[in-house]
Structure formats: structure tokens, C-alpha cells
Length: 235
Image 1 (cartoon, rainbow, N blue to C red):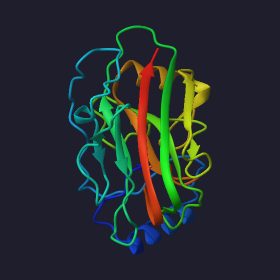
Image 2 (cartoon, rainbow, N blue to C red):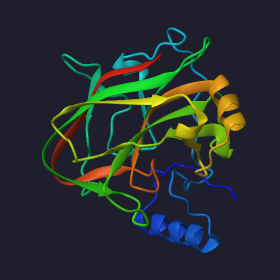
Image 3 (cartoon, rainbow, N blue to C red):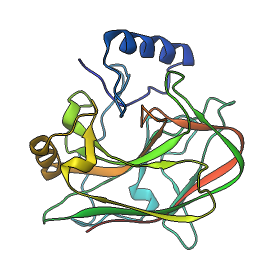
Image 4 (cartoon, one colour):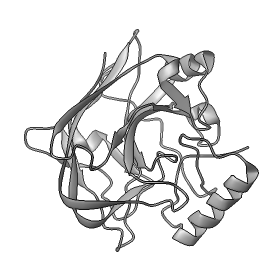
């Protein structure tokens, strides 16, 4: 069954509810990151990174995709790499994917992300109403030339961060590059598929969603919140 982890920015919440119900009826809902989308979604281009095996910290090299009420790139942040403000749910905004080109030409063992969520009385909104709070973000990577259809085009690290749980603290997440720590679009883990995908990695970054649909978007109902990336490296 074709499932993709994107939310078209033109979808209304009614569209999301209807598509979510269809997926539930088909018996394909898994506790991971499967998706709903339309043919109008365009995959990211095959852009080359500035340097192989290095994740750029230049905000202009990071792209905010499949979101609404967001700039195309995060902003430079003093004392960190970059930042963005979570958009208001009342204005129809949401943030979904934030990613940068990446190539691996040597053996690498883990992904480490250091970040801080600066917030003041936030109430995070999980955009997909078929999903469950709390809102989350997860590390992910995408194959070069991904068409947003094949389930092995994108892979998510297990054990993300629940927004609001440790806001206003500096947090570091480290995930081994082993197949048991990652799952694909359909929530499946397979050593051979994972190895083939990582060997063809073209993008890396983070996605925002709920407990089941990890890239379906997050917004703010009330309060303020800013995601600050301090460091992102693959060793």
C-alpha cells in the first residue's frame, strides 16, 4: 500500500481526517511515520552538500519542506547553528520537515543532534487529528532521488523528543547507524534495506509530528516556542 510521510500544505484538516480514516480502515496504521499526500508534492532536488560526510550548519543550506506559514530556510542564531519559530495553528501554520543535503563516502557510526527548544507556556498542536499528542520531532534521512513513494526512501530514528518535556534545556540525542534503530515510511526495519538506503543517502534532518505520524506537522495553539539547532553531526 502506498503511504508517504508528507502533508500537502493545501490540505485542510478535513482532508487529513478523511485520509486518516481511510488508512485506518485499510489496516495500515503503524506506530511510526507513514503518510498521506497527493500527486502535487514535489520531491527535493538532488543538491550536493558543500562537503561529504559533514552536516552543514549554514542555515541557508537547510530547507523547510511541506510546511505552511514558515520561511524557506531557518534563521541564523547567535551562539548556535540556526533557529525557527513554531508557527501559529490559528493562522494555519505548521512545520513538518527541516533537512539539508548530505553524502556519506566513508563508514559512519552515529548521528548526534544537540538542540534547545526555547518556549514560554507553549501548547503544541499535532496537526494530523488522527494522530496523538504529545508533539514530537525525530531525526531522519532521505535517499538521493527519493520519489516520496517508495517506503525505503526515508528512514526515521527511533526515540525522538517530546516537545515541551524538557524545553529550555540543552539536549543531545545520539542514534547509532544500525538498522535496529531506524524504520522506514511503513514503520518497518530491515538490515539490507537500511544499508542500501544509507549507502545512497542524499538528505538528513528532522521532522515534526505526533506519536504515530512523525512528519505530519506541528504548530502552536498558545504560547511561544523556538527550535534552536546547536549542532548536528554524523561520525
